[in-house]
Image (cartoon, rainbow, N blue to C red; front, side, top):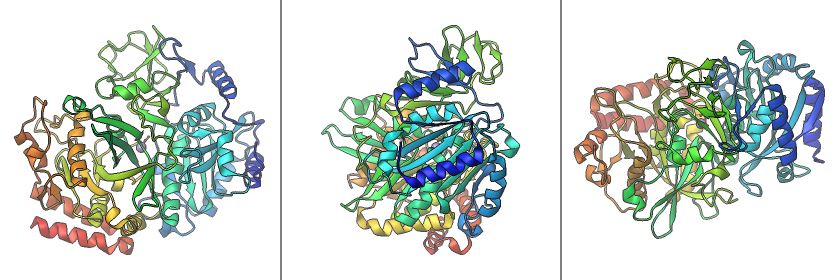
Amino acid sequence: MTKNQNVLSWVDEMIKLCKPDKVVWLDGSEEQLQALRDEACSTGEMIKLNEEKLPGCYLHRTAVNDVARVEHRTFICTRKKEDAGPINNWEDPVVMYDRLTKMYDGVMKGRTMYVIPYCMGPIGSKLSKVGVELTDSIYVVLNMDIMTRMGKCALEQLGDESNDFVRGLHSKADVDEEKRYIVHFPEDNAIWSINSGYGGNVLLGKKCFALRIASYQGKNEGWMAEHMLILGVETPSGETKYIAAAFPSACGKTNLAMLIPPEVYKKQGYKVWTVGDDIAWMRIGTDGRLWAINPEAGFFGVAPGTNDKSNPNALATTKRGTIFTNVAHNLDDNTVWWEGLDKNPPENAIDWKGNPWNGKTSSEKGANPNSRFTAPAKNCPCISDKFNDPLGVPISAIVFGGRRAKTAPLVYQSRSWQHGVFVGSIMASETTAAATGAVGVVRRDPMAMRPFCGYHMGDYFGHWLEMGKKLGDKAPKIFNVNWFRTDDEGHFIWPGFGDNMRVLMWILDRCEGKVDAVETAIGYEPKAEDINIEGLSDITVDTVKGLLDVDKALWQEEAAGIEDFYKQFGDRLPAELKAELETLKANLK
Ligand code: OXD
Ligand code: MN
């Protein structure tokens, strides 16, 4: 399928190591893919769902010990330890290659190796990059088909000579969690993943390449790979402005990316278009502005909580050609169910662990809290017409956000790009089920990249500052939002979902200098009456005032926490961020 010797000789080397019985190159053709779907169904790896209700859809269950990303087993192996930084796990690449080579030796005996050439980003775009993933899992092949542009087109994008492709090696091996490794060698453009079958650990184009390896490439090549959704807001006059927004895993990026405008905006003719829901690659265009593409071709979304109120567009996206992972299987009509889909759980079902399950009587969950849908972006009713545009879209605003019960206000704007980098660097959020470990604990997650930055976080902040200098007055404005403030009983105060558009509208008005702001200790805030609450029954101007309140005592604690967090970066923490912290402390006095 290719004459590229760099690809061919690496694949040969890996075949010698893994010793598969058979090697299959994926060309991206429907016949080849359908044969693999049929094979996966014949072995029980996947279950074909109701062709009438869910055409082309399948269900897969991972091993019970293998349902989320494993940050404690994820490594960045740079030659110098300090280049991986204090937040990443590190091992000497020589030691790690040696350890893993022993584990891969003969691991595919009796199995087939699938060779998946794939392109991250639109075919023909200068912003796109190619990877090749070798795997022994049909589930991985079929997910990569949805999540990337896969097959011959990717090898054509690479060309016959180029060596600029990411070498990804994956084997499920025995799915042994004690021997699970998700390892990145940024200096070799390589990713080795073993003993997992969970998406975030094994779809190597996604977190491993498009964030960890790409962030490292972006630093060296002068661009940015970020954990951000991209959406466009179209005004009644037909002009569209784009926003990129970073939130930690399972904090509502997919919902925000696909939001349905509230009536007050809909009736005026506003529309929201989705470019991406998880990852943005951004470069400075010839016009000096920041342009973004979504490197992915599908959505790997969290299923629980997705319903026709929270995200009708996502739900519609999953109605054909979708792979569901770890949701409940409704045996009555051979469909799927998850918590929060509707109020009518099936009685005759199989839960995500594969056990008989009655949703009406069982106290157990039917779907894993991190169960997923892998759905083609082209199914999405609000997919942007720029989704495949090789140039991407120009970004007007960058938005950071997290899940904070108290501290962070509904929205504030940074005073400058430099202050905005500070705002991103101090992001914190309550943890979710997307990674293994305790849920609901507040942890610092700078730019939502804590689990995904492929090099020293201090240098990453430095790279952000550099990009700001290059962008100058063309730089997007930077904001922070928090949809998750709670009242004394722990209930969310802000309605969220589609109503978040009310906050996005203030953000876009700020970008265009159409609305004033109030200067506070932490940055610019809206006047409460400038957030449009028309049509919201439970929210008054006073509620908005409360949501915008900056509690100085809480922020002083926050500043102390930031100071502590910053210490670990030592002299790789840019002086500009230290200065911003001092300004914050002074403002809070
Ligand atoms: C994801 C994640 O799957 O962030 O997008 O974990
Ligand atoms: Mn994510």
